Amino acid sequence: MTTANTYTEPELVQLLRQKEETAFKYLYDHYAGALNGVILQIIPDQALASDVLQEVFVNIWRRMETYDASKGRLFTWMLNIARNAAIDMTRSKAYQNSQKNRELDSDVHIQPEGTNPSLDHIGLSKVIGQLKEEHRVLIDLAYLKGYTHEEIAKLLEIPLGTVKTRIRAALLQLRKFLT
Image (cartoon, rainbow, N blue to C red; front, side, top):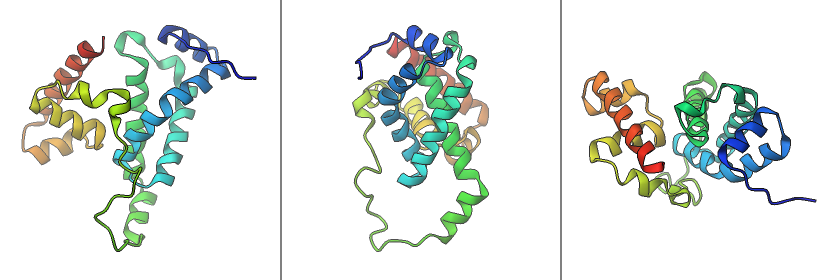
């Protein structure tokens, strides 16, 4: 017997901190698709992305007490966990070796369907589109493509401090758009 519960964010956080399994199922059902989309932007291998997604939800379950609502929304916190887990995976020696040893398909430049999911279903593209171009590029590189701040600074040939400042300003602007 399943019930279709709807939770406010504070209620959901409270239930997750109490290790309530139905709240965790609700969390997975409502956020797994969006988090998987972010992971797939960094790790294009669906099977590996699924493994990372599972790791992300285990981390969320274990670290729920560390979530601080005053620092941002629950989704943003989970998004950062997912992004960091995906980046950690791409930096691991096992991943690096697997990328060196994989076979290339004959249609190497064609992305299979489903590997580049649209984030429009959560409205993220529309919100990001409201940012200034310089902020939009940084958010895309940092949060959707998985670049570190240092890599972005080198890629765009701007100082690291400028990258950090602009990303912070962009995140503050996004927070205003989302509240």
